[in-house]
Length: 183
Image 1 (spheres, rainbow, N blue to C red):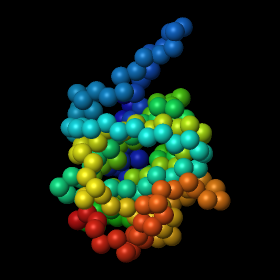
Image 2 (cartoon, rainbow, N blue to C red):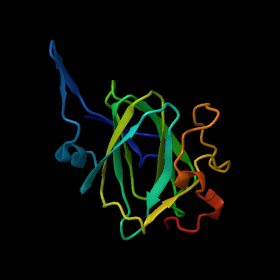
Image 3 (tube, rainbow, N blue to C red):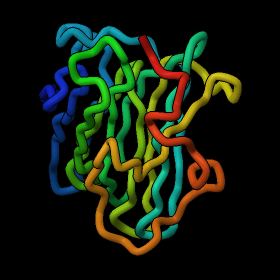
């Protein structure tokens, strides 16, 4: 596995090796001991998968607070996304900053989004499937969101007239108005 820190070093891009032959390829997409040796020692408790039919589907920016904060290991099974992680840790020198990485099924790369970060993605192809491991179970009471197009965050999403959003994401508060962040 190739483990590379992004511009915010706590957010890491992980690209598993693929072993190919005339039948296709094989890849170990998650290997605890390899990641642990790279300083990533997380216990994942739940796997999630989403399907987005339309190009321009935007999910996020989501996160969960204690007692169920989530780190996520995100990958694309089919299609591609622009994946974004925003630092919501008030005590961090990168508070309010973000990184974005294009994840594709063809490349097989993954993004580790640590606890303390908001997460969202924008689909770049039709019929995109995203799978991710999380370190805490989903908790509606702990879930929070920040508006995807908040001008203070200045995320460069792909140019689309109107992304496909959930009702929850349409009414998410602005970053400056969100009182529930991380210390």
